[in-house]
Image (cartoon, rainbow, N blue to C red; front, side, top):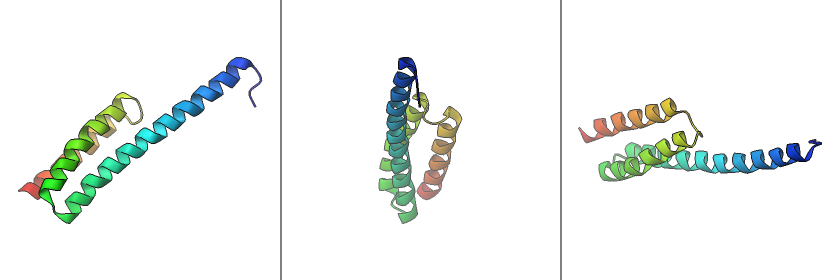
Amino acid sequence: MANTSSAKKATRKIARRAAINKNRRSRVRTYVRQVEEALASGDKAAAQAAFKAAEPELMRAATKGVIHKNTASRKVSRLAARLKVLSA
């Protein structure tokens, strides 16, 4: 248990930040899942629309420090490659 007032405040800040990060991470997973479901169904238009929505969400999460920049880039790249295969 935190003893000093500054430690108590730090605990509150950490809890608040963790909740925000959890929400952002959840949003990213949702958007990525939507792309993957569209790819699995073979719906090219839906997959492109979902990818177009997911890419900025991934990069925003990277900017905010929720996920690493390289992780976001890797996910975008792999989704784009799968979308390209579907389009071809």
